[in-house]
Image (cartoon, rainbow, N blue to C red; front, top):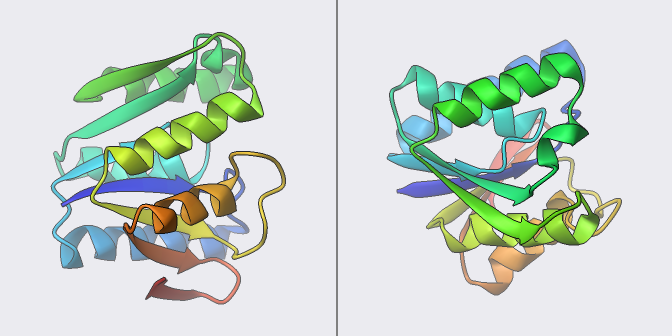
Length: 159
C-alpha cells in the first residue's frame, strides 16, 4: 500500500515523539506499506521518511514550492536535503514562494498519490490553510482511508 503522511511539525515532548515513532513503525508493518509519500516538513514527515529509509522502502516527496528549503533552519535544511536525496521520486509544484496555498496543494497532492493517509495529529483545527486537519478532511472527501495517530489521546484509529 502507498501511504501518504500528514502531520505536525512539533509533535510534542520526547515521550510523545517516541510513542509516535512506535506507532508509525507498527503501521508500516500492519498495513503492509510498500511506499510512502510526504513533503518532508520538519517533524512527522521527516520521521516517516527516516523510518521508510531504515526499512529500505521507497518514498515520493512532494515539494510545495521552489523556495521550500528556505523555510528550514540550517540544520533542518541539511536533514531535508539528505532525505530528499534518498527519495525514489520528487514532484515539484509550480509555486515559487512558501505560502499556505502551496502547502495546502502539496498536502492534497500527497493524498492524490496515496492509497491511504497517515495523520500524526492532535485532532484540532488547522492553524492555517494546509494544516493537518485540512489535509485529513481532503483525504476523507476523496474516500481515502485515514489512520489517525492521535498525539493528544495517545490512540491510533481509522477515521
